[in-house]
Amino acid sequence: MGGSERYKIVWQECGKNSRAAERFYVPEFEGYLPFFLWGEDLNLLESKQQVELREEQLLKGILYGMYELDHHPLPIVQKKDKETYLQLIDILGDGFRYENSEKMILDVACNVREKNGNAASRVILEVGKSLVPKSSQIKSDLIFDLWEVICEQKLNNTLLEEILLLIRQIELNQIHPNAKESVCYYGLCSLVLLKMEKEISSYLSEYIYPNIEARFLKNRIKALLENPSGFNPIDLKLT
Image 1 (tube, rainbow, N blue to C red):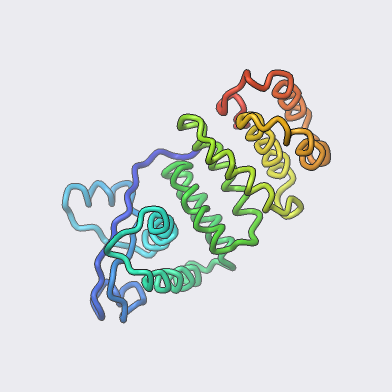
Image 2 (tube, rainbow, N blue to C red):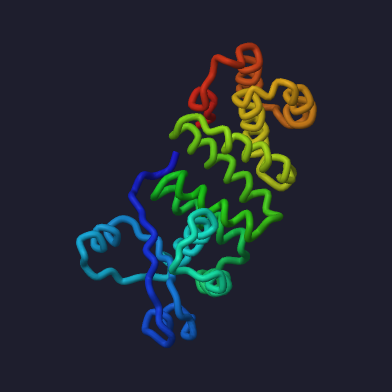
């Protein structure tokens, strides 16, 4: 369960050679840069006081804002601007001394989760899996965020289907053993909640029997299979 601080994406206009464009390493950029604001900075913004924008807010803003652009295109942002955002991700990642993009995305998502909740970190990870498509760790963390989001909202079949798709893309030997068991468990829960009875048998053989060792998970799975209509996502949550 993540934090609950309010947050907002603010799109800051930048002109060529403007102070903001030079401050954030893109002096030739003309367009809008996304900043992720929360806490006192968001309070200052909403009370129309001056906010000092920082690199951390820009990195989070880009990783969140790129999802917004793909799902809710903004007329103020041009397709070519995405090239600048990708360039900035690399510049900022180097500035914060991340060893690679995967580590950066996981750390940023973790920080956002702790402060702002799973719905926010889920968005960061959705962008992250497109930036580092071979990362099983990003997909694994995304599954946990998705389950939290499903528990917070009404049952969402689209998100359950996304969990199943992500599991098929994960190299299970590349994630922590505990995460591997949990991911496989949530996949079975998704199948049950989606009422995909025909797929359950093969899923058990491929994912459950070879990977689930924890006794408490085996007990949960047994109860779920014996009474598949008796549970909701919150009942099935592991933490």
